[in-house]
Length: 248
Image (cartoon, rainbow, N blue to C red; front, top):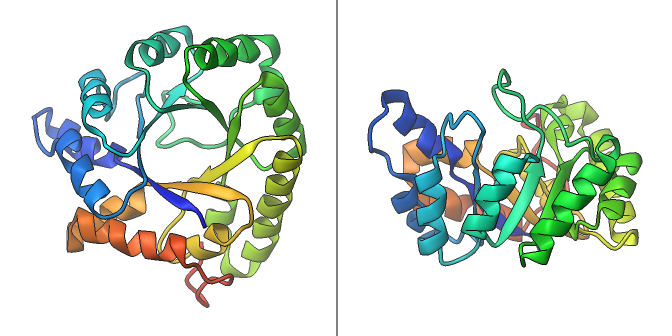
């Protein structure tokens, strides 16, 4: 049974639209936890477009579940992680011009640089996960880096037309199996919604799903606590097949 990490970046997006103090993602993270969130995820981007340094520092002090810090694999972000010491760091690719993360980290192309970064973070007691595409080459590189975890990028599955979702789901399942054979623990996320999450949640070996935008969007109608409760029910008691015509 997968656990649920709730990404609260887009609460900060609303705040930053006016450069004001509300809504405060630190305060609202508590409502997500009350709804059943097993962890809180934030992405501290280099351009600080939503989550700010003070958010990460305060969340580290107030989150009662666990704080997963998504960040670019850079020296500056590594310094933040070593100072704040979240429960987990997830290394992700980052481009300033992208709206959201567009694909997985190229672990295979970063070699010794990535290995050193992973070693420094994990030596400080911070488990590291690599956000990668469901690709054998990237999984092998993640294992070689010394990382203990990966997070499979589910974007192709989430964006696929309903008829193509079984093919993309099979790719995720194959990647999950390979990762576990390599000794890696597996999370998954990106683009998952209330309509398409259940088949991914039902995959054997996936330990946590990180989900953000769809929960924040739903919260506008029903409130954050209820939106998290609804997603938690789908994640913890999933059906194997998606609802007809509602995937992607």
